[in-house]
Image 1 (tube, rainbow, N blue to C red):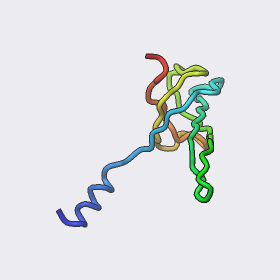
Image 2: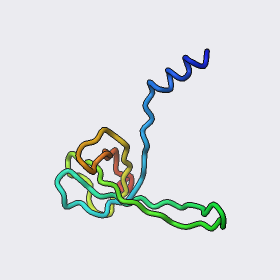
Image 3: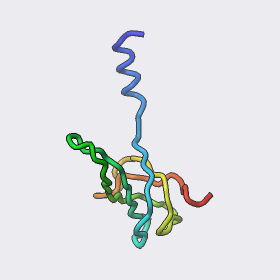
Image 4: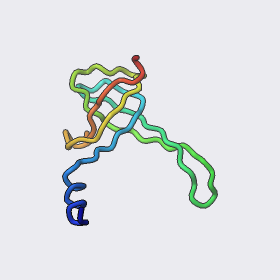
Length: 93
């Protein structure tokens, strides 16, 4: 397979970012706020530290509650701040 065909095939397949986080707010209609914590390593000092970020995630059926650990994926822009869609609840198994 040539290089040009490989580039075309990779452009056709969409890779969506997936994250796992904890629901920290759920009072908005069809929207939840999810906190994602990561561990990073400082490039110079090699010390590990935690960073966190909040994402507004679309919840169509209002089924996720505060404290749930969910998996969510990138999608088209739904509103000014929402670019994520909830996939499944990981904590309730």
